[in-house]
Image 1 (cartoon, one colour):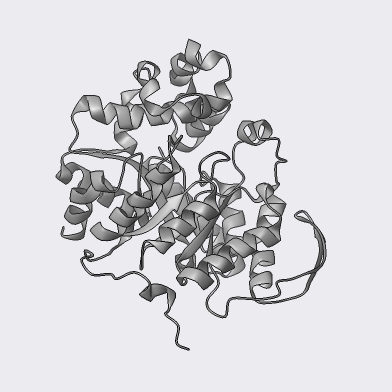
Image 2: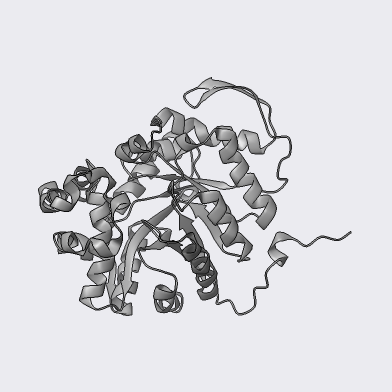
Length: 362
C-alpha cells in the first residue's frame, strides 16, 4: 500500500517565492481564540515568509496543538517555538514534540528554548532552570532523537534508561537558544551546540552587532565556525501605517516587556538606554496590582493609555515603521549588523505582505 509523504498532503500551488531570511512571530501576547493562529500560518506561507515562530503560553497557546494545526495546513513553511521553557516538560516530552512534528509533517520544525522570565515562571508555579541545565538540554535531546539509551544525572534531572521506542529516521530538529544576546548567553549558545539564537525584540542594531561579536569570540575559543549559528532578530513591524496605528502596534507591545521586573535594566545594559525613562510606564496604575503579569491581565487594545508613555526614540529606532522604503532600509541595516533572519513581530502575515514583496524584490 502506497503512502503520501507529509509534504504531499497539501498542494503548494499559488505560493509566492520564498524569502529565506524573513520569518513571522505569530500572534504575540494574549489570544481571544486559538483559531486565530492557523490562518496566519497559511497566509505566511502564501506570501513567501519562510518560517513562523510561536511562543507557548499556558492558556490558549499550547505549542504542540497549534504547531501541528499549522503544519497540517502548510507544506514548506518552517515552524518553531520561540520560546519553549524546558522546565515546563520532561525532556522526553520535548523530544517527542520534535520527533512527532518531523515524522508527521516533514523536517520543518525548529525547537527554540529559553529560560523565560522569573516572574512568569513563578506565577505558573514552575521551577527556574540554570544555564547549566540549558547547556545540557540540547545534547540530551539529540541523543534521544538518535535512539540512544541514556543514563544521566545532572542539572536537567536524573534519568535511567531514558529512550524512545520509535525514532524519526530523518534529520533532527534544529535547536535555537532564545535570549537577550549577552556574553554569558552567547557562550552557552556556542558551547552547547545550539544551531541558532532567537534574540528579543527592541534590540538596537548596535546590540545585535555586539551579540554577533560575543558569539564569534565564544566560537573561536572552542574552534566552532561562527557562521554555523544563525541569528534571528524579531522586529516590531508596522509598515505603511499612520502614526496612531503604528504606535498601537509598537508602543503597546513594549508595555508588556517593561512590565516585567528588571527588563528595563536589561535593555539599559544591551541598548544603553536609560532605564529611568521606563518609570512612567512601570509606575502606571494599570501595572500597580501585578506588574509582572501585565501581558496576562490586558489585551493590546487595552494598553494604549500607558503605551503613550513609552519613549518614542526606543520604538522607532528598533521597529519597522513608515514607508516600505524606510522599512527595507532598516531591515538592511540590521542585516549588516549581523542578523541572518528578520522576524516580523506584533502584526499579522497579511499586514506584512507588501513588505515581504518589497524585501524580496529589492
